[in-house]
Structures are given as structure tokens and as C-alpha cells.
Amino acid sequence: MSRCIELRDIVKIYRMGDQDVRAVDGVSFSVESGEMVAITGASGSGKTTLMNIIGCLDRPTSGQYFLDGEDVSRLSENALARIRNRKIGFVFQNFNLLPRMTALENVEVPLLYAGFHHAKEQAMAALERVGLASRANHEPNQLSGGQRQRVAIARALVTNPTIILADEPTGNLDSRTSVEIMELFSELNTQGVTLIIVTHEHDIASWCRRIIQMRDGKILDDRPVEPKRIVHSTLTAPNSK
View 1 (tube, rainbow, N blue to C red):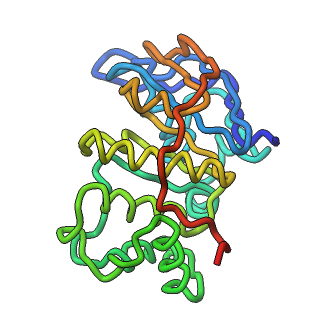
View 2 (view 1 turned 90 degrees about the vertical axis):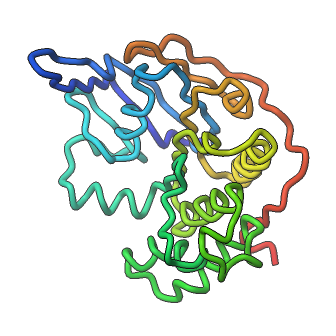
View 3 (view 1 turned 120 degrees about the vertical axis):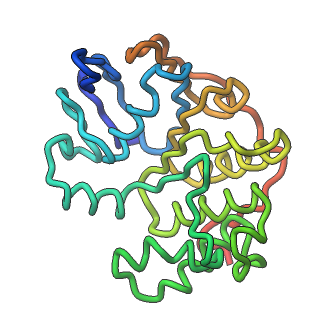
């Protein structure tokens, strides 16, 4: 496997009144292509700040961040936007779907921003991949929480990114639906997708093959684990037809 992410002594400092807060404090680690990694820790541990840096949504105060061998820590905003659109898919706790658009139209959005041709066909293929093609013309308020998260995952997948970052992806879901979403992530990982999941829930982290635990902006522990097994899946592999 090749190394897709490498962080070297990453520091992120926020100014809070007259104090400097080190939200991320000297973090170094790497992620190989095809890994499924959980970043865990209590609220305020720095895990979401770290995910924002990995996702090129924020810049480190100091340190270097290499994505696919390129130092992106000092790139321009336009260059970072291109990387986000081309290499990184995002999945959020609150789904972040546009309420007056159908599932298909929501999945199309990243393609339209990137100027892709045949966006509708690619969006439908992404919905098929997560087992939700039959709901393509439904708006978010006509979908269950689990279905909305599947739409969000399809949207993250539609540009064929190198990495998917998921921030508390099961935080608004019940236990049964959370298992379904984690089965979906696990199946995507078996297909070669690199996944980094930020969570404070031990049960969710245990689906991953590696757990990085943070506290006070530092890495407290970084260890491989034996992940949970997939029970079932409605996922369609790309080009499987």
C-alpha cells in the first residue's frame, strides 16, 4: 500500500481572548491507502480540528501535511478547494443535504461544481452503489435518517475521491441504523476506499482497523485492532454490472 496521508508535527493554535489554545499539539502520523481509521477522543480533544486539517478545510499553524506526496499545508485557497473536490469526500453528522433537492440532485452537486459531464448518470450510479437508487426522486424529508446518510455517502463517493472523511456519521442515528451505516463503510473499505472516521463512540470506532485516540490535542494511543465483521450489505461495487 502507498502512503496517502502524512502529518508531521502538526500544531493548530486558536486565539481565545488573551489566551492561545493549542487545539492540535504536535501531531504526527501517516495513513496508508486503503486503511480504515477511527480518530477518537472526548469533546475538546482536538479530533474534529485534526479532521478539518486533513480535509483541507483548515490550515495548521505549523507543521507539514502531505496528501498523496504533495505538501498541501501552504497551498492557496483555490488549490485547496480543487483538492477537496477531487480527492476528498465528506460525510457529516447532520447529513448537510439541501432540503428542496431530491436525493439524485443532492448527489449531483459536487459534480456540477467540478464541471463534470453526465452528472446525472454518475449521481445515479453512486446512489446505486449505496443501495438507494429507488429513492432517487425523494427529497430529504421523505427519507429516514439512515437513508439520508446513505445519500450523503453517495454524494461523498460521486467524484471517486481518494479519501472519505466522516465526522460523527452515526451521531443522529439509532443503534440499528448505525450498524447499517458502519456495514456500508466497511464494505466500501473492502473495495479500496480509504476511510477516516471521527467519533467519540467506542462501538463505532471498533468497526475500524486502527484507532487513534486523542486527548488535549495530542495522540494518546495509536493501535491496530481487529474490526467487526460485516453482517450484510446492500452495497453495489462500482462497475459490477
